[in-house]
Length: 150
Image (tube, rainbow, N blue to C red; front, side, top):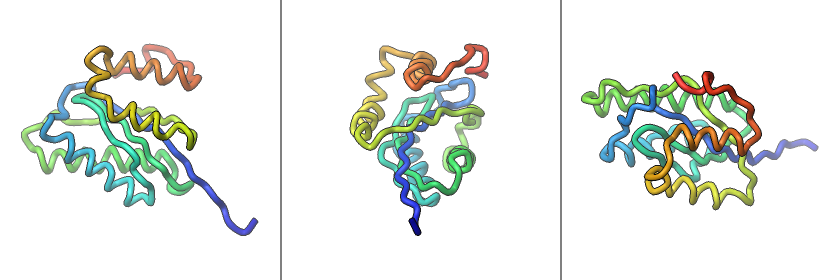
């Protein structure tokens, strides 16, 4: 076969450092838009972006290159710098070091996009920590509690 064909869908999740609630209502739509722009710069397609004051979810379609870890590094570093430039009053904005990246089947895109769109309501009843533990378990990741949070 002379060509490679990929269509890689990922549900990406990462939180602010110490899960500080620093993503304000004013900042949120602009930050989600900025994150989508970074995904497009990386050759990807932002399908859904959402979250709350302490974390973000992205449903993205990416190419096989660049590597997923490079995309995440650009997302986090680029958006952190942008927040510091655009919202200098939010001087304690940083992303947590790690992230979650979960593959999504093509048939699961609508379900994950709806889940991301419903983050505000979802988190009226559940913490980010509980949500992230559930995602890890659902995707078969074994983890030690002490390795999850800084």
